[in-house]
Length: 322
Image 1 (cartoon, rainbow, N blue to C red):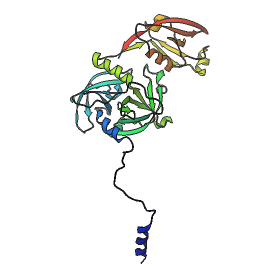
Image 2: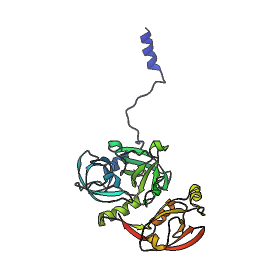
Image 3: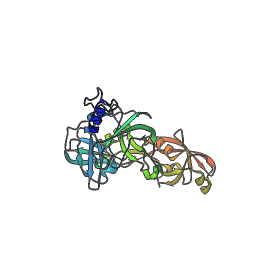
Image 4: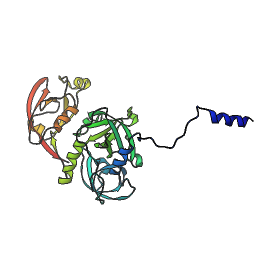
């Protein structure tokens, strides 16, 4: 009797969930975007690991230089599960980009958006984190013109990065960062791991940089970058006190390359660069960003503080290749 009452109660309980099998009129999320662009994202396998890549031309894939490393040949795994050998055409360590020619010549080329996205726009990352092919994560564009914290002191990278909170993990490098229309706005570059205290801090190389660099790599096999010939570090109160520097902003020159443009212009170790090519310099990132906008062979004004005195110099921008 109790069992019958229980069943009877269940049949009339208006609070019970209603199960339906009909799909909604409009699919939520980014299913159409993934269906359209997903086939343009591949996995790049090397003897030492794996990463991701994005179709650039019908037979060429772009990825990160650190994904291919020193390899001349890789394996390309396509979204449909097939695979083929790939030949590394060229790499550029400065921007961390590489191009790989595939055996297939019918790959779907996605749309690339040259203009920068704006903070707050939707950002969708597709790649192969930890080998999980065509994994999709979503977030927003968190910021623009970023440099990975601490990197400017150890690298000459000339890239202004897109920051996103779309989760990026090992293996996502070289994959696509998309906008809400499925256009590629960047190539995923790196993330800050949780042990740094970061939560969802990822970075991507903007499409404009990707298209410029890869065109040079495909056509010439190398990239010509503007070159100043210095290494620098951030001016901090501790460094001011340690070195007795009398400047309140700028980038401190730590080394000057022999016979480089800076040396020819009279820049010395210990100088604080405060202005360069008409721009105020408050950080190493400012210095690198300004240098990126110059052209080899141009003459640019530069201001340094040396022994408390302000000195105006002129430097002829040099060049270096990848």
